[in-house]
Image (cartoon, rainbow, N blue to C red; front, side):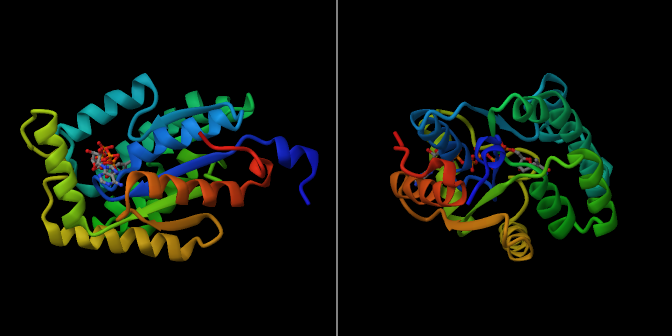
Length: 228
Ligand code: T5A
């Protein structure tokens, strides 16, 4: 049974997974469903979310940090995260607004740590520093074969009339992305109370329904509230 303070506490939900698995699509759909359930929520992303963190995003995704190596990049992601937590995540949660983030600290652990080889001590130190107690209440891990995800990203580029150039990490080879997938699954296994793995190899509508079912089961204050 929830007491009144737990029931009214704003929740922090993160979406994680490899490239092109459908995180952004589902973050938007969850926001719409929360709005329909009369929950005030903000959408954000990493790297980014604040002006300073978006500047770090551009620097990294343009490939300008590549020569820093995975350790240097982990520090840059954490610097962006520290600002994101201080200026956006913590103030919104304190004001009673739920926060839904497209990627968060598990991405550093998966990309730079488990797949990139950065020492776990540095990853843990950066998490402690940047999160400052503001860890997610729930993490939705969208899981799929990276070869299928890359076809989706290529199709999106065709539809948008853009060249498929690939940003800093999309350029890594398929074996790297298979190891990345295994890294996210390992994080989920290590954090069973927080992480829920959902197959992203289903339609957008089916995935949206699966995510709502997980979110509404995790947070009893949503019981009986309709989604969009
Ligand atoms: N990074 C980030 C690190 O290395 N360390 C860190 O600490 C952090 C925070 C961020 C990059 O930075 C790295 C990870 C990344 O490489 P990004 O642009 O945010 O860059 O990268 P992605 O998160 O991969 O963004 P994408 O937009 O490519 O992927 P999404 O958001 O997972 O997918 P989405 O929703 O845009 O969908 C992709 C395409 O598939 C279609 C969509 O319409 C779209 O065309 N689609 C579906 N098609 C069929 N069925 C479905 N169910 C579909 N869902 C979506």
